[in-house]
Image (cartoon, rainbow, N blue to C red; front, side, top):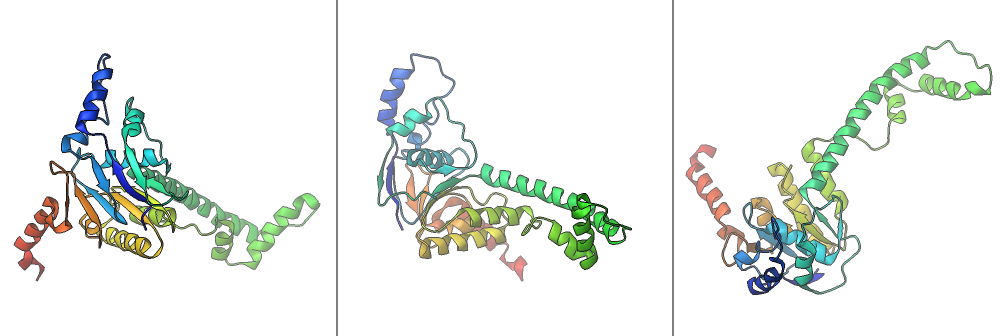
Length: 285
């Protein structure tokens, strides 16, 4: 499913004309100007899965944030825009193939990291409460209690609950429902599966961060199925070989000048992995 058909960034010439006007004042940076244009990256023609590949500083995350801002889709974490960010976005153009669904969003590494911290804090709290409930259960089960007034009603219910249940079932019933402890990798993967819904446009900024190779493979399968069967479009910045190998993905190589479209097996990092494992092939037997 295509929602966003094309996106056009300012050319080097249009950036030059703009900066000629603003250079009358002193600025520390003109970001995001001069980031993508130095690679002559001027236009993206999207497929259902489009990937922006490149090393640190290549501009792949910049491109993703600029696209997200132009579309106006949701983001969970705050994004600190530079002085010239809005002007740059205003100079960009896009062509839609269909209306952008409301549940569309950009998911960044900051979003996933914040979610993992929240889960970790929640689990710490649950563990502390669990220990407290063990003690409460024993106190209630063997308490010498007689109800004196209606003010004792809640205490009576608690004691009856303890006496009618095993220790584990009592603690389970008192804790929050459907909460369990996740590893960082499980939490990160769960974040994507919860946030990505059917019929949506999703921009993923280096989703492989915090994911083990096995989890990256699972995420790739999830993205592939969601794009194929649930009308989702994905724009992904990544250098993960598991995501780059997504079937039918269109890959823009931002390490090239000018930026070119390549097959995943033609990318320098993938060739490096291939050569390395080929050299050590005998070690796997």
